[in-house]
Length: 514
Image 1 (spheres, rainbow, N blue to C red):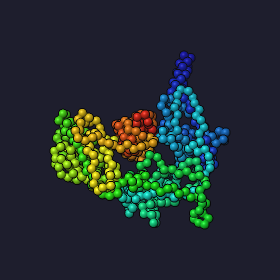
Image 2: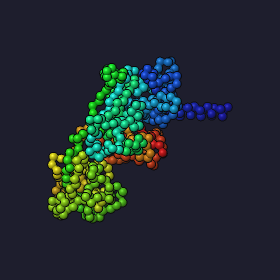
Image 3: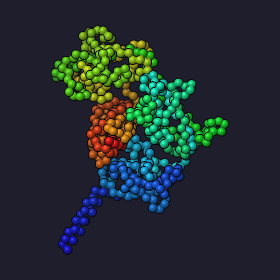
Image 4: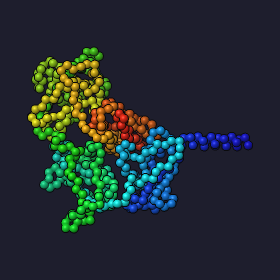
């Protein structure tokens, strides 16, 4: 009898322990609109909820429609935590999963809930927030002007393809190679008609234009448009049906305006060859070498500079390149009164470089010493940015101060130059884009937009909420940024990446498959 009482006490304690770390949460989703659209068939399909609380996978958290009203309900134990859990509803058929498509940049386009110690029932929501079955048959004439990209050398009409990818099967479900062709009589303008049957009039068609190098549908590094948000079209249901004449084809026509790829227009490039003179005062570098004895390459932290032998300029704006340790002679500066240098021996080094017509008007660059990257911390936020005035065939940049974009040389001042005047773009919204490619192995690219200059970092978490990687990028300028994340040290699985800049943050999900 004593043994039985002991076992009962253990069972009660175990029950109490299990209840102390799990809370009942009831999820509810209305599938009626999806049924009206013919997307969801109750007889063959099922609904599950997936989120950070259960690993973003599997079919264990299934919702049921017990009373046949089209509202699917499920109650599950979720571990309490002060931070938000992100989740989505998924309907499943055979081997296909259909995830919700939600626009919520503040939560990585997911739903979210904060779970405490008290059971809670979440409000009923519509799958993908689609509250109406209203739809229309439409055909869209997607058009993009590639003339700037051709002139800049980013797109070769003879070999490359321009394709459209978006959130609909007919535009590849964010993949594929739905190719646009150049219009007759409109050089540089590429277009394609795409039909959408029963397209919702309350949910947008989201898309972007993509460059496939050499027309390779499996291009591992396709050229996605660098936009803070996707392009969008939402049918109204009242589109005219005039094509083909005389009576149409029962699909209303939508004619979006012609856009430039990445919205880069002719105003963003130079229209003639311009000989640009770069100038940098290296007084801070000389001062630090005199006081500290050396500076170290910020890329590898091993290569060291003890004396100034030569100065180079490298950059991400063609014709400049980031080829550290192998910089071409035409990108070497001098302080001998020739090649664009005004005064010999004044510690202001100069070089003149010709930027061909079609080059970007904004130039991103950085100076090196002895072909080592020693001017500022690694990362685009520490680079110099200048604008080229192409009204004349020559243009003289203001004198840069070596290291002025960072704090590495803050104890040594320039005597001649002013600090960089970095152009601050007007940005209306903070955003974090979906990484691409996704799934990835082992590297992926992440684009984001900052509304203001601030200290910025990227954190990566596993499905249990453990931090597995942190990229501290220091103070970054306002505007659009692109970084590369390397997951080679991580195991395959679902991860969440969170961008934090000042008081703003956003989170998205990514999948690593090795």
